[in-house]
Length: 295
Image 1: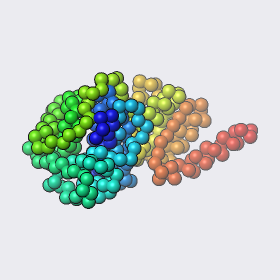
Image 2 (image 1 turned 180 degrees about the vertical axis):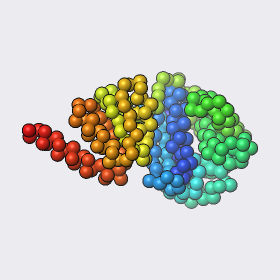
Image 3 (image 1 turned 60 degrees about the vertical axis):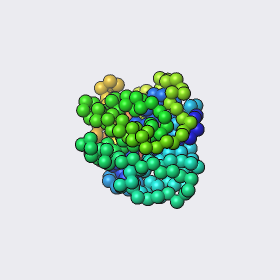
Image 4 (image 1 turned 90 degrees about the vertical axis):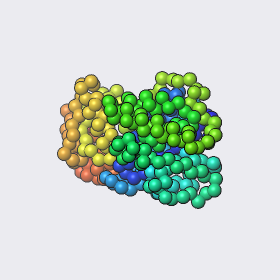
């Protein structure tokens, strides 16, 4: 992995916390002064199905996740079988041999086994915390300062849960340092820490809507709508606006159309399937605008 940039892919089943793991790493390297770009891919399923998160970390500004992957965290067999061809030469795969059995077909890919599940069992933590163990291993592999990750974990969780996650990260970091000797050029201390923040796409959309004067937001929670719904709910009081959890997509579109006809800047968000339900309300709104313009 080069000193100035590297890319990571994290893969697992829906519900495994793949996206949260990627976001946690993104925040950690941002605190080191690096620029990051993350892309989340997920299936239209409540549980199950393959999900992955791609993260690009770079000294200079970065505008996409790129192509070649230098490091993979595989929480399931599909991650290896589906994304092996995306790995760069001499890339590294972190996995738990007790649960992930798939082996890469390429000879230039190196495997790094970390007992993610066993460590969490010893700590008496929740199974999903194996992700934190893997993130600690990543920090060790990249010769990065573990305190960056520890700080993000303490900001993301509270009390005993935060400290248990920190301990899990330390165990993953220690296991890799004790059992592997991978030489990587990247070091987080190479770049002075800068005051940067990580903004998700849904948050950026919400911030721009508020700055544009949005005062009413109505939506029904369905991926990927749930993110904007939660974000706008958090901003409701501080920005003197109303966020309404509608009973369905049809209700949401009708609500914002009604609000718009009273002169209020209103907004909704939905999925592809949800938009199909909204088309009738959208069509009626368009007809109403045309009739108003004609009159």
